[in-house]
Length: 337
View 1 (cartoon, rainbow, N blue to C red):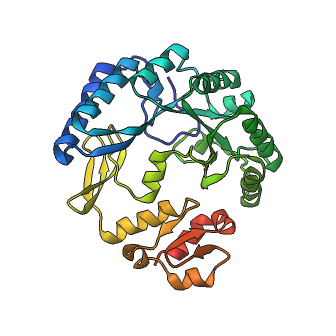
View 2: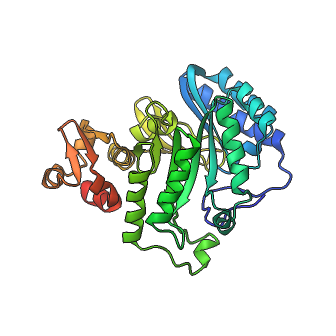
């Protein structure tokens, strides 16, 4: 296994993983949190990071069983598995579904084989289309991730990609701008990247061409097909990170904690820090942020009222306008006091 040229997330390339040892560590963490939090209800479970679709389905089943023993899994729980084309066939997909997976997120990134090679992906477009088709035919909620803003991309090439996505019949997809991180292979290359104006044109081309409505900066879905797990995170609900480098935000006895899996971190969050996090995540969504007392304490209401072209408010909620979304990073700097 290998990492892609743009990937800055934690993962380890490993030819012979010890899945039994991995499961034992994950189950040990689950048991710990069961003791800490009791039989809380779990509304969503998300297997992400690295390529979790590589794990044996028996290992996936063991983890789901451990979660069921330590927590109450909601009857309508959304259980997502991130995957890459080439790691799943119809038989394994059926086994994952039988073990509880009901949502599949596929890292396609491009439908152009030359761009896939540039990104360092191990699959081609036909592999990706086969996996999407397999998931949708089995009635699994199926989403796909795509990357735009590569060298040579333009509003026209992005619009062409969106028209191809429309033809796939997906009910959810994510459109991510290529970001160059310093400690990646791309970060060590002198790539000629599109400028900000070109990126804005590409972003608007997605809005104008993709048939799925945007519900978050990078996410699009038919009504009712949004990713519930991510929506909960963006809205400020608590969640537990389990496994190396998995991030969580845990609420215990009214106090918030920043948490990282594998026992790496459990640190209290101040009321202000937690409110800032809620603004940073909530303003990425089209529904915005509820103006609760802690949020009012840290946002600049004068700035909001002075910039109705960037932020809409009804004194109960705030949300970015389409113009505000285009400059969201700068907007947030001015929004938070």
